[in-house]
Each structure stands twice: as C-alpha cells, then as structure tokens.
Length: 295
Image (cartoon, rainbow, N blue to C red; front, side, top):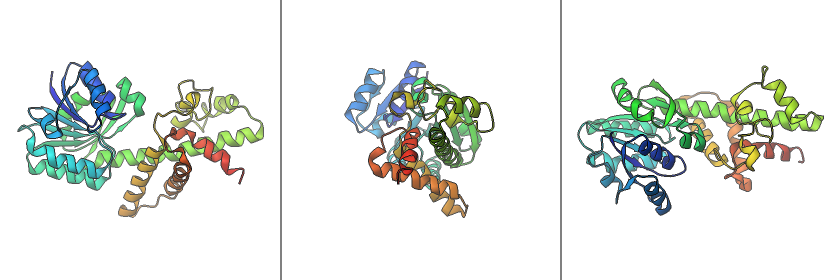
C-alpha cells in the first residue's frame, strides 16, 4: 500500500482516485469544488485542507487539472512541500511547454516527475481501463507504472519530458478528424437511403474501419455502448475536443508542422461549441454535419 496524494477530483480525477482506493492505497485528496471533495470522501479518500497539505508524507503525488497554467501553479505550490524522494505525476492534458516547465520545477527540487495524460474518457476512468501516455526519465516512468496500472490497462513510455503530452495531442487530432469523417459518411448514407446498420456492417469490416466507428459509432444502434444511444451524453465532451485540437494546432504552429485537416477539424468543433453544444459528446458532431446540409 502506498500513500498517494491526488489533486483534481473532477469527472476524470474523481474516479481515478477512487480506483486507487479500491486498489488498497491510502489516498489523500484535494479539490476546490466541495461536491468533488464530498464524492471522494464517499469513495474512501481522506480530504486535505489544501493541495500543499495533501502532499505531505505522500510517496506519489498525482495531479489532474484543466490547463497548463493550473498545473504549473499547483506544482509550484506542492513540489517544495513533498517528501524527499517522492514522485509527482501529472495526468492532465496540457501544452507541451507547460509540461516541460513542470518537469523542470520538479527537477530543481530533486523530485522525479512524469507527464501522463490519458485516453479513454470518463468510462475508462471509472472502469480503470485508461491508456496512459507517459513522458519523463526511464527511472521515473518505472516508478510511476505500478501506480498507473491501478487506473489503466495500457501504460506507454513515449520518451522524455513532455513526450506524453505530444502523443496525446497527436492521438486526439486523429480522433477528432476521424469522428468528423465517420459522421459525414453516416450523414451521406442517410441522404442516399442507406441504413445505419448496413453502412456499419460494411465499413466496420473493411477499409473504413476505425475506433470512431467501431467503438464510438455516432448513430444509435450499431454499437449499443456508444453515447449516441444515450442522447450524446459525454463521454468526452465536444468542448474538450476543442481544447485538444487547439493544443495540437498550437504545437503544430510552434513546430512548423502542416496539419490542414487538424486545423479544419478544430474549426468544425469550435463552431459546434459556439452553437451551444460544448457539453455534448464529441461524437455528436454528426448533428453539426447534418445541419450544414441545410445551409
């Protein structure tokens, strides 16, 4: 059993912390939102009065926060309060530069650190089936992996500091683009009189096969567990896809990479978000695709 501090108990962090408790670890948690703290307490975590208080005596510190500025701010607060030899892991999805700043801060205080953003959405967080994309030194990754295995099923070391974030934004750029493509295909099929099931049966077993189709199909019926069967309740909300596609564009611009489809996907999801659908699952983008035909 390890002593683990967990900071950030939102839709992803809360279930992740709960799985650490289920695995037998002592979890000291903190969040600014009272309801999140109450749920974590119900799940078996001990709630600290502050982030800095949560990390005292912890073997491992995990953060799950909204953006890079929050990660850098919280790490600035907690790293000096951590026990000597402790490990700090950030599971947020943030920009690569902020991730590198956080690693540098940990190194300055002699702490091992890993950036480990996740894929799998709230279902993966609850079911402990997340994929972790990790950046950091080999030794730090080796220490982080047994902890992360309590919350996920695939743990990948992608390289040095910031490499986990780089892998995450590249992966989610593929996801955003492919979901639009699948949505367009089903919208076209509807216009051509082809049933959802017929298109699914063909594409899911041929060259159109992809995760957005076979696991997260954007129309009700073919994949019963997809959000389309539950009114597009997320899942992974469209406003979070906007965030990730924007991170990808920022990284592409900084690196001098050409990502024309990634840029167009960002524009499409931003329009969907601006129309008031940011809280809809990202697979609901098919609704926006259908609406374009009426213009």
